[in-house]
Length: 417
Image 1: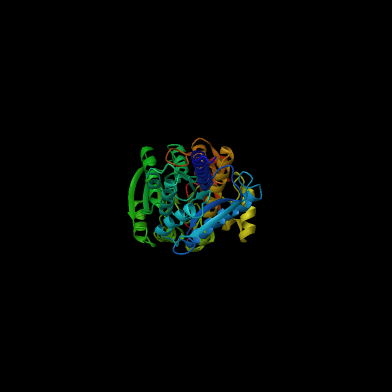
Image 2: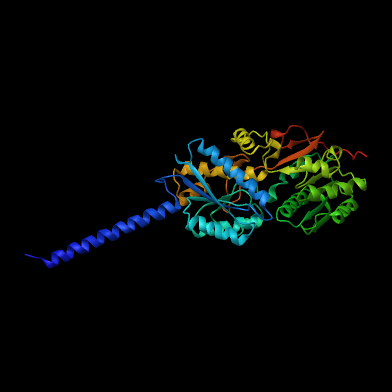
């Protein structure tokens, strides 16, 4: 006898089972999208990079760092036994395209993890997209103070915070006996988010240490030839010239002005330029004009005894046909991001972004640039600034003493005419 009610129950049960299976499938897709330990196939790591436009050279160097890390980690078993596959798009050095790229990487490509681009502005944009999708955002280049004031709890910057670059210089000055310590300092800086935070932080520390400021000059970063500010530094007659420069070109404008005006401070330190090798030597008129000039360092140089550095130098120089001195800091920062990501995944034993972020907040890591430990706003509080000085034709570490190849040359020798 036909039982209509029983047939109806069978249909309802079948429908319930079907819906349950759909829910299971959706959960599996969502879990895979955000990454979990049941991953099949390669682990996809997404990146937006400035491969064209104004920041293309830095973007290319950043990509080289990530590619070197992927080769290294894949040669050592990958992430949780899975090979790493990098997925990247060109942002054309544009913020809007950065936003589009990270949205595409997460929503369309379903990458397991994302890492940071080049530039502070693009870092914030990428982290905002990642935060909406509950993704961790590890990066190495966005380190300006303002980057950590957006409430981005998913942002983790592995590199030395920008304002901390000059702390070793300050520590050296304040460690000198009172009879030898410089008495005055002149500050001149571009208003760039990389340079001015360094100068302002150093000024606050030196002010507290009793070093008198004779000049505080801030000028537009677009001023590539800051001869005017250089003249003001000369007129200040300060014992220390502390310069917020962006590279060899603007740094050389100061050096040439100082040489022409016979201004011989006890110490000269510039935030960038002296670290640019041959470009700096040529810009200042030869090796004789480099002697004694100082520059801060974020914790890496080719010979540093840091985590996996020898393997990194060998791999990147071979892969991209570079000399050790040609390795870009962008590449170092990108590789460091990969190192910390690998350690976090290994510690969490998961590709789940929530678990990875929890691990990042409560663990100390190692990188090419030294130790990494994150504060609540994403800054690396364990990193240490170094101090380099040109001595007898070589740029060498001079402080802290634990890593120094020589003592600081103080006072700086007078210019050779």
